[in-house]
Amino acid sequence: MAYLFFIGYLIVFAWLVTRTRFFTDSGLSRSQLSILFLLKILAGIFYGWMGRYYGNMAQMVDTWSYNQMGVVEYHLLGSNPHEYFTNILTSPYDNGFGNFFGSSDSYWNDLKGNVFVKLLSLFNIFSFGHYYVNVIFYSYITLFGPIAIFRVMKDIFPTTKLSLLLAAFFIPSFIYWTSGIHKEGLIFLGVSLIIYHLYFGWKEKKYTLTRWLGVLLGLFILFVLRNFLMLLVIPAVLAWLLACRWPRYGLAIFTGVYLFFGLSFFAARSIDKRLDFPKAVVNKQQAFLRQQGGVSTIPIKELEPTFNSFLKNTPQAITLSLFRPYPADVHHLLSLVASAEINLLLLLFLLFLLFRKKNGVISKNAVYLCIFLSFSILLAIGFSINNLGAIVRYRSIVIPLLIIPVIAKTDWPRIIKFFSVKNKTGQQKIAA
View 1 (cartoon, rainbow, N blue to C red):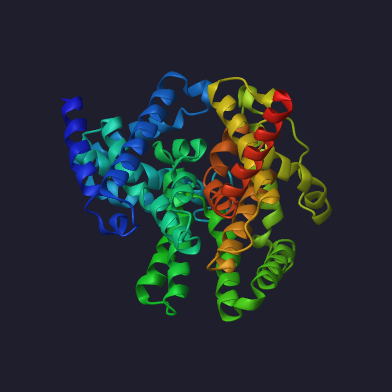
View 2: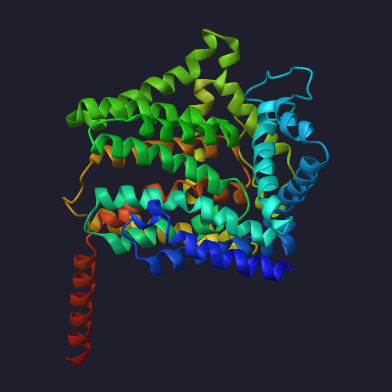
């Protein structure tokens, strides 16, 4: 019966993808949309398979736990609807709804898992709890994220459709972590909605109610699934709006806004002790340090909630989030792929530096938005996480935002010509 459910829903949603206006307006053909959707489903199935058979080794036991909790919530909907609709609004802790940035004994820390389980329970109304059928539903919803980013980048870099398509959908860690039943797919959707509606609101020279609702929806998704990301998005949104007002000074505006928020990060606690952001980051790091992560956990210098400590640990944070895992960190298939991928991406960045195009950008400020937002997220990851598996998963949502501009601004014909000339010269020397 599960196989029949899967095949039936697969046919229906493969058809629906080719009829969804948001997807078809991307400029991709129906066959391309179908292929992308099927690839997401395959990645989600592989994710589930890895979680079932290699979950402990690959740090992926959560996906099946979420599915099982979703089944429990689904049954609760039938047996006690009142409890189903109200339990997410109650806190089991003595501090009630306090401890907003807490890593334990916090309603807000639990909210991300509770909301995700509720979503799966709604899926289970139609799938009857079958994990791989839920993968189809999840793949359809989360496809809106990469399609939104693709549409933005295609408008910014109008002459590089194929390379944009590859960068937006086919980065291994991105398609893997955002297609499996976990929070990353929805988190990337939230980020994408914000960028999409900010960009096209500027392009249309008006921010309609629909545009602002799209931005608010994206912020809400981030708030319930990973609340610190919502805080990181706020300076990006403010800098974007100011840069739209004074577009010639975009880089200076983004730099100034982020410097202001960086200083506010340390100064806010002097206004209200509850706004002790450095302490919240330190607590998050301590929560990760207390976890037993096996071979994926690496020793790091511990943070203190002071400006000097954060400054001293910045190189470590950058190294962790941008360059790990090293080849020496490889212990299984996923870490091998992650290590190979990050080195390939660094090679692409080197090629970009050597063979960069000098024009072809519709909006530099949109690129600044992606870069500043991405690096703030990467710094947050590097300051708080010491588990390589978690680092790879968390950073997967920003890789397309960084790599798409790199690939689009690289002069690939010049690279091909350069290496062709080198190859011909080498052959002539051999022949001589």
